[in-house]
Image (cartoon, rainbow, N blue to C red; front, side, top):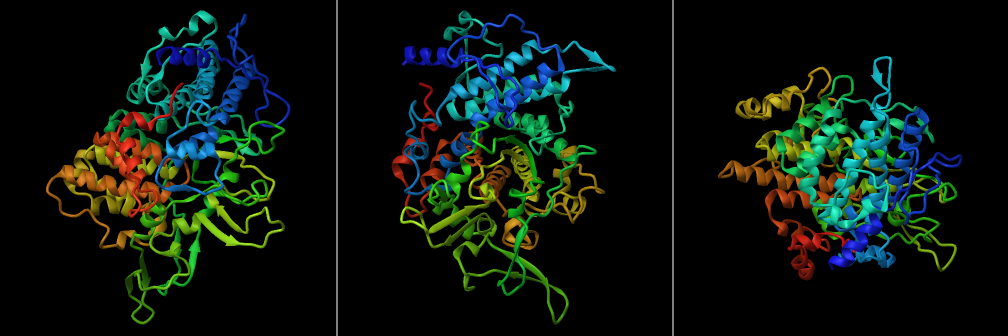
Length: 571
């Protein structure tokens, strides 16, 4: 085992690809031989074109891990099931049997990003000053955040991984014995210190590239720091980073109100503004990996073909919502507040099981019905499926199109992790308010005790002129109606504060599922929550029930009850 791992590390580490800007597509580039150490005579990056090309090249390397970030995070969780048409490689990921031959199991691609980042950070000339500002400071901060995020993904997927922060430019530098192995906590703690000095550094401004704003290509440093602190168990620090990102003067991020809801108290018509955020307008999206829209130009995303019926897959989609996700969604209480037409007074109505729904997908939380849509359509050939699925999160207009980007961060991820951090920091009322009420001035004063507000301090400071009733929504209301009026959606009286924290964490876990299903967040979320509890069976129980509470996979439960079995093999 040791010799095999040493050989793997050697081959993974000595791949250095030096990206160059090309003429076609977004990140067309030429590469050095991937199995040879790159020997560079002039290492310095001291011209604007050098740093821009290198930064764009790093984004090109991120394209290689874009799809697998979603697939490894989603297929190993409990919210997605594969159909009989899924490839064997995808099935192996979902069944935790992927080996070194699986194309989604390539740590080498993560190290290609890291190696390029290390090279940039080592050789970008940070001493150049123009008009009192360091010329490459913004690019330097962007690359620091890419490296931290990529290392975090590497540790999430592989457990304990070889760690290095210097570029490998000679064969002697790539000896496995030179590198320690870091787990996710060690990596998180290292990069908190590494990234913190750049928390107030702006993004590079390159305008629009490929019909997208280049500012969307970068990772928000405060959010990455929040994630690192959350994985490291530094909860109050995590909450502070998330809070300061959401409330930064001049760049605030209220929750806004993308919802799907019943339009009348008869529960017979639906108003849906929820799915639109995943199509033409991605206003809630914070960070993306831009992808090529043509195979001719380079790396395209295949997520559209996996989650949707397309011409390329003969309309046989490969992934869909799981029974566990169905059960969770349908178990939610939908609450509607309306003005009584006779008394003109507000009244609260709860959707009940006696209502006849066109589909069970309309029972409970409505977000699933907004995202997953199924239809039957005549086929032109016996090789084409007549049962066709659209997953709005990966929908592309036109049968021959590819996704133009893969989302890494949305505003709602930040709010949910903010709630997770607040809760673990000892503020369960505040965390629950993120889910039920929304954190604006009146709600903070009304629903969070004075004692908790005092202890939380500036973590609950939200500008009353920016965070308003109209734009600050409890996240649960995005699919469950007026959650703030739901008398059943509360923190019950429990024996201890620790019990309340666990109860609220369970609600946060459910909300993460309802809000981010199919986006690749689920398995890392379950991992992190299990780590908070020091209980691997928390994750094991969720994943083992992906086929429903009545169909628990006991073998999978036993396997995942051992933390080492969560990870892909490095060999």
